[in-house]
Structures are given as structure tokens and as C-alpha cells.
Length: 545
Image (cartoon, rainbow, N blue to C red):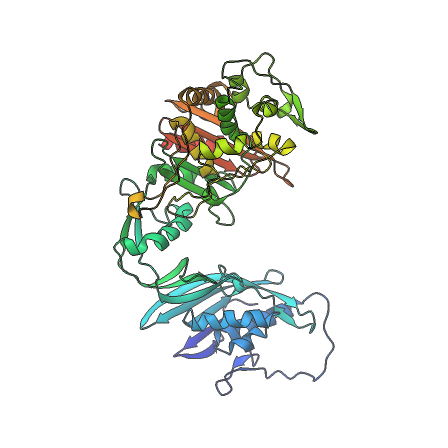
């Protein structure tokens, strides 16, 4: 496909702008019939083509579809140029009727194999309000299974890259007014400066826009099927009055978090204030844009030993300075568990086993608890994990530690198996260890909507909390977290974790730590050992606090 070819709307009538390269008579809009006219003569019967597509077939099919789409032809006619007309027709129709795109100039790029990139420059208009709109997308040409014709391989993302089979475009008065979200000190938080906050800012607007003092504007937005209100805004035709919403975030800590996760693919980090539960930062660097920091569900590896150690301490089965067996391997109900590289700690204490992340020291104590729900109860009653009632201000997941027996229970003790966490959960666990009492993480003040915050049944006993903090301090100064935490001063503690994932050759790197009144946790998928990748992320965030 040659560059410079454009399909445009002139004076409200759809025309083909040749730009020096003509389409001839192929699929030009017919003002009389209102449909597509193909003046190229074809035989009534022909052989069904097979085999790879030629460059000519790819170019011709792409031109035909883009011309018909931009020309205002009936959606059903345009859809016939794809390999799924039934699915394509309502999306193409909605582009005009719901998104209110009144004209378009489509500029194809150079085909790469069967893929043809293109740019769209359009105008969106509603009730006298108009705004230019431009974006890029691509299509793929395939051979029809039954006809052998070159056709566009249908996907909603052809029309717009963010469209899926469960979303559509709509232009309407916004469901909620725009907000100006600010951090705890009044610094404005924008998607452009803090990209990780994009889904969070959208959710804050959805929940609190109507109460923040603003008035709605007119917007083009993505709307999920079944939702009563639009979601992500793609274009603002008319701005409403902006309301101000104060969050608990700290712009400096958030900036450090954004920068830290950029160093690794598929990384997330969260930071909270132990004394209050206020969330100071949430950042993700992910290919899918998912807010994994607050909604993720993954095994947290040995960072879970904070909860396991608290449970064992509360049951008086261990003490930080009492001896604890740490053999190289341990078997529990038919499953063999080992320490990293097969290390052991002869004549060591429980604090040393914690600091060096000895798996076997924890697993050998399972039967002594005499309670299959011991870990689950500790997680829920003390650390607020698995209550399924956190109210942070935006959607979040508050972790899960199901009851387990046998080898599954052993896996849970070291953060594997059915334990599910995200970095906000782990930052909160660390905050509880530091503070002694669970404070449910919050992103906006409870006074904003008088929502009911989650509470734990009880606090850690003072002696248990003190030992837990001391063991985390040992980890941060001479244990597996020492390298990552070396540059930090003040009162600091840490716990590392490596979580094995099925089908993944390298484990996920987990790290959680505290410095004074700040706790943070991070995960880097396929990052290796806890201190290798996630450790520096946490250290960078703590250092900014």
C-alpha cells in the first residue's frame, strides 16, 4: 500500500481523496444507492483461492475496507469486507451512531506482511460541540475460510486499539464531573506525570466526582457492556467544572515508585504509612495496564513468613533467640522442601532462620500448631488479610490464605500454594508488623463518604510485635535484605521472597520492608530472588519517604 492515500469527508459528503494515487472504481461510495458499488467486473463463478496472500491482495483488501469504513457506507456492507460480518457490523455502526464520529481521514502506512497500520484523523461532534480526534491502529488481512477472498481479520481493536468485544465507544455528557486529584500536600496528580495512577484516577472520578464540587462535560469514552456509566475518557469535547479531590498519596513517593518500576518489566510496588494505613504510592509497569499493585493475586513467596512467624511466636512455639532447626531439606507428608542452594544453619536461632529465609525451619513446626486453620486465622484476625471487606476508596483485593492440610499447608507456610497476595497486601502486612495493629489501607479519607473500614479482631502482643520487628531488622542489616537496604538509615526492617510459578523458569522476586513510619512492598515477575530485583524497588520508594 502506497503512502499518501487518504479517505476523507468533504462538506459532509464522503469522498475518496486520491492524493496522487487513485483507487480507480474499486469500492467507491455510491451516493444514490447508499452502499458500496464494485464496478470491477468478475465472473459469476470462480475458483476459491487458496495459499498465501499476495501483496496485491493484501493492499486491495485493506484499501477496500478503509475506503468503505470512512465513506459512510452502511455498516453491514463495510462488515462484509471482514471475516466476521456479524460481529463487525454493530461496532462499525456504533462508531458513527454512538461515538458520533462525523468525518475521518484515514492514512494507511506500509504493509508489514499481512498487517497494515493506519492513522485516523477524525472529528467527533455532539450537540454543537466538536473536537478533532486522532489515533493509530492496524488491520490484518486473511483469506476467508469459505470464500478464499482476502478479508480483514475482524477484531474491535481495528476500529480503535482500546476496543474489545466487551466494550464500545460512546460520546455523551459525562456521568460524573472531572476531578483534580491532589496528593496529601496539595500537589496535582495527573495521568501524564504519574502513568500508573491512570486507572486509579478514573476510579476516583467515577466514585467521588459527583461529590467533589464539579459539573460534567461532554466526552468520548470507552463503555463496558452492562455498565451504566462510561469508563476511560478518550476525548473531551467540552470540559466540565473540575472538582478537587484530596488523596493520601505523596507525590514524591509516587514519583520514586513510578521511576523504580520502570527498571523492570511486569513490576508493581505499593507504600503505606503504618501508623494510619494511608497509601502513599501505587505504581505498576505492566504490558497489560492492569493495576496489579492493588488487584493482583499471586503467591508472595517467603515474604509470607512475616505472618507465619507471628503465628508461631503467638503460639509460643518459637522465640527469636531460641534455637531452631534449619536443615538443608525437610519432608512433610510426602513433599520435600529445601532451602535455596541447599544451605543449612547448624545450631542457629529462629531469628537467624528468618533473616536468611530458611524454609525448613518453618515447615518442621507445622504439626506443632495442631490447627489446620492457624495461618488463616493469624492472617485474618491480626493482619486483616482475607476479610474481603477492604474499602480503600477504589477497587482492591485484600488477599487470601485458605485453610490447608498436608503438603499444601507446608507450601502456605513459605508463601506458596494457595496463598494469594498483591504488593498492597504485603505492604500492609509489613505496616502491621511495624505498628503492631492493622490499619486498613486507604486512598481517600473515610470522612469523604463515611464508608466502613475493615478492622482486625486483635493486635499483636507487644512481645510478639517486638520480636517480629527485631527479626525484620536483622534481615535488613545482615540477612537476605541487607544489600537492598544498605543505603537506608533510620529504623529499618525487611523480608525477601522468591515465588515459583508454574511454566516460569525464573521465580518472581518479592521484597517488603519498612523505614521509620513507611512500609513498602514490590514484586518483579521473573525477577529471581527477592533481593535481586524487588529489593531495589522497595529501597528506592522507602528512600523517597
